[in-house]
Length: 72
Image (cartoon, one colour):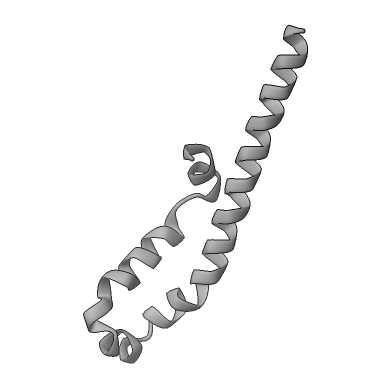
């Protein structure tokens, strides 16, 4: 009985990791366009009220997808 419980617990943790990993990978793929655009000085100048958005997207792009998934 304990082996079954441990197996189900391990399976649920692997599934949770997989779900978070896929979500973070999708978020990163969605932000890739904005990361590229934020490197363009003209675009960045037009977005100067929202520079925090560019900085946040860049910061999120540097994080490890696996570590983010493990943290959640």
